[in-house]
Length: 155
Image 1 (cartoon, rainbow, N blue to C red):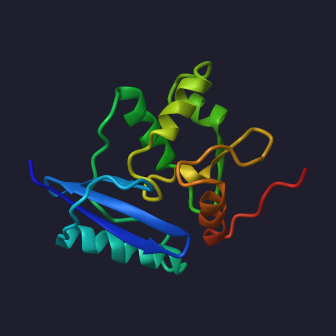
Image 2: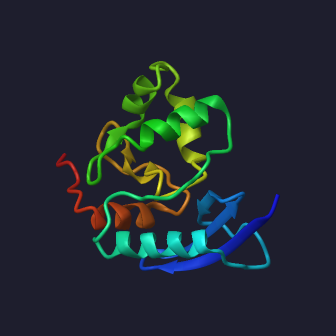
Image 3: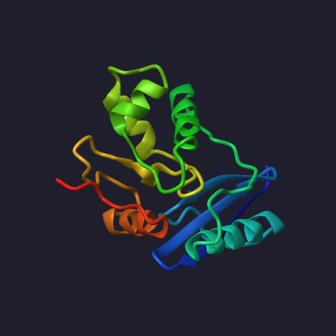
């Protein structure tokens, strides 16, 4: 299986994109390979991410595959249903995947989202309206939400 990897600088920080077999398999914040290469799909991904950061794209049109457990795949599917500019709590996502008492397991699956930004785990917040963990760091998460014009809940 051929795999291509590239880094991409965004206004919020560096991200890394990985493609395999014609699908995006990873967008993350940690370096995932030493040798960079590019493909038409990686270039399309960079272009769509740039459009997103410029406020010109609300949805992504990219082929991807989630590599992970059934729970992780279900959670990622639920994350894609959170509308642009909206948020959900970890508890709401747990309920959406039919595991209302498994909030911690669902939170772990969210934290392992292999395709950040495109699968919008940044739209998940604590029940109290506060930011919770994010692989790219809370400032990156807050930046993504600001791109979407999200307004934090008042306490």
